[in-house]
Image (cartoon, rainbow, N blue to C red; front, side, top):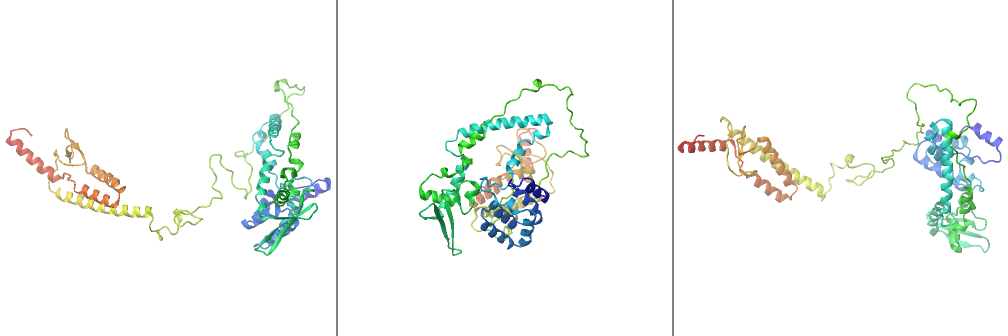
Amino acid sequence: MQKGLIHAVNNLLPLIEHRMCARHIYARWGKIYPGKDLHIQFWCIARSTSEPEVKKQIQKMKDLKGGAKAVEELLDRWPISGWCNAFFSDLIKCDVIDNNMCETFNGVILESRSKPIITMLEDFRQYVMIRIAVKRQFALKWKNSCGPNILARIEKERKKTSKWQVEWNGGASHEVFRDDLMQHAREGYVVMLACQSCSCGKWNKSGIPCEHALAVISFNGVDPVDFVAEWFKKETYVRAYSFTVNPVKGREFWPVSDEGPLQPPVVKKMPGRPVKKRRREPLEGKHGSKTKISRHGRVFKCTICHEEGHNKLRCPKKDNNIPTGCPQVETSLVLDETNVGNRQRRQRRMSGATQASKGKKKMHASVQGSGPHLGGVIVGRDNPQFASFITAGKLNALKSRENAANQTKDGDQSELTSIAFEDAAFPTQDSMTSATTQGKKLDTKNKRPV
């Protein structure tokens, strides 16, 4: 934010509290001083509710690397009274340090603001008219005197009250304290229920009892809802939405001006594709998808070494340190040994068949014998009638399927199955030739044509 605007607001509106968005301040300051530690410490300063807490958090930032210069420029460019919660007024009862409410409204009108002037304003009017009616009906359904978000925040603070001790001074004040054994010190605050204030400043800024106030309220046995600021009560909420926006007739009922229709200004078409999306800050991140969950912030954990920061694909211990007793590793080792044995037996069988078939005439024959198929098995080039035909490629494929089925069984059973399959009598070229010769001799004696 420019300093000219800060001085202008102070001069023209001296009684108005000028707040600035802490998120936009960090977006500009964080580009100059990046780092996760500085990022965390900035928001600790912005959310501090008392001046001693602000000084403590500023000193922590100065102790970081490059923190002294970062703090100096932060406080020089943006006055801390405009973005730190500790310096906000207690009358407003609002501890918001950003303008997300405005950004939410901008997101609602995103589609309408690209329309012509009259159509855009009509969309705004209709949206406000519907919202007021919906919010009023929503408030009338409250079963308590406060809204559900206020009750949820009270419940969140109530869970922190167990660590605090309460002492009453006999008057209108209570002392809430706890002993810090690590720092050998006592942390204490003063709570005044009649004034609805706590020395930590959180109850004063937000109007909702803090954990110290809730400890005192529990000590006295009263209802914490009675100590919530009037701004958050059901009656105030309904009164804020008691007004209505009147509906408007259609465009055909509007009066026609004698001056003619108002024309929009002439728009000069710029080169290139028109850009409708806003420019995002470097620290803001990319726009999320509507169908895919972002993986930003996800911590990967390796399933091999059980360390964070990587997965099993990039684990440095994947090849060097194989865990013993792992069923997956043992199974893979057994399967590897089985595959090697099956491959060696298949190579020996193929080499024997090749040597036996050298120097002999290739021919086909039908043989009725044992094999993986019912009926006869034919090894050759033709497919005679009423006989099954199997080639060398199909034979290898059959062997591969049998090996794959054996891998799912135990090691001993797999070895027995592979041996039994190896001993199966598959017809070779020699057996085919001898069987054919014998068949011809029989046919010659019986005088039957071959």
